[in-house]
Image (cartoon, rainbow, N blue to C red; front, side, top):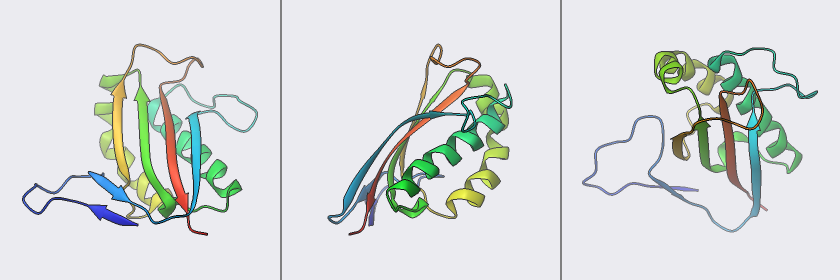
Length: 131
């Protein structure tokens, strides 16, 4: 996997502008919300939901033999911008705990609502697992 970053661009913080991956097994992970394996939300707060959604993404990825560093793209859909902005500092240690220092190409989109209530954030990912 190669991080794509034009030389004259400022360094991104917490994401990559682009990633190139060699051939491998492509894994597409559907949007995962912050509920547990029984589809129950243990919290209505965005930070614990983010952590659980990330764990869910990684659990699906593991089913394909993948690891966090195989994620090339991650999209987050969030319906509580003030809560996200207020909790940004708390997300960094959660990210490092589960993803290490790997930062895929990422997009964050603020939306009106999510299908699963009381969901505040949903993560979807694309990974390339080496063959």
